[in-house]
Image (cartoon, rainbow over all chains, first blue to last red; front, top):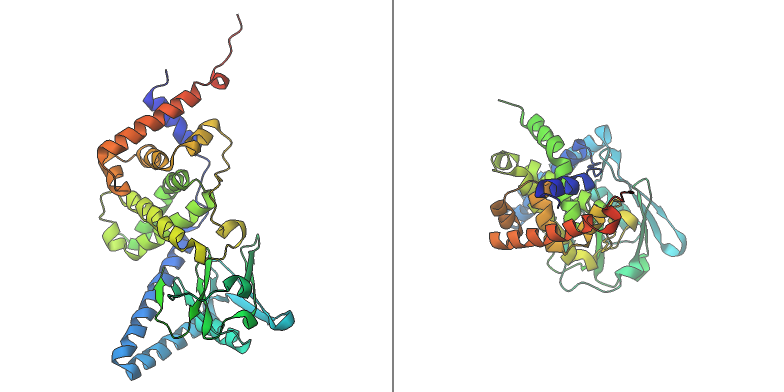
Length: 185
Length: 165
């Protein structure tokens, strides 16, 4: 008869080869993005009460982030035109990359893709427009990079693409541009 | 006063593998478990002044990871899977070529969670019950059934060494 102690030892030994591969720096970086995302959401809330002051604050924040991005972080995306009016977006993942959501939003807009880009959170609307599968095709490479083909012609009228960028994954949805948005981590 | 960042780093290094193993056995998916545990540790760092005083901070991390799994599952149909790493899988993908691990993964989910918390994270019955939101007696029952199955697995013919006279 196997004792409880022996059994527990065998159970522990059976998973002893599992080790976290995420370095602590990536955890801290993820936490920093979460904090910043929360601050941005708080700033957006303040717009309701005091538009001019809040806009100025967001502007200062954006300027600061852009400057810091240029100095210390690598751009987290590349975007190019594809066949048939499509766009090819590559998202890089890793502690060395920092995504500027506004820069990506502007770049997508230049390719005719209306989008809401968020970092550390993702947004949805209810109802959610149909057709996401026709708009986005995504695959992940062994390097961790995510390649996404976006077909702007398939985005329904009045809708936009919501991209939630996380350190370890990416969430997409179609959202109604004018509907209230629910955002969560 | 100790540097709080250094304190958190020490906490992470000391507990990351145990948390991963507990969550991996619970969700039966190594990559998913790593994402969940990574997210949970990031949340722990954003709340570190409070979490550092928690009676069992590693248990807090595991609870957050398991709760995050539930919220991700609810959102699952709205996500576009991104290949192997991002895909939600119901398959058992721990890649552990050990019979005991295989038997562990064949247990019902709740029994796996109890084994993960009681055995791998070494939590007591009451803490395990709080984390899983079930009664302490239910924890004891799940653990007894799980250990019974695992014990039978270890006593199966292929685990008995043949002795030649």
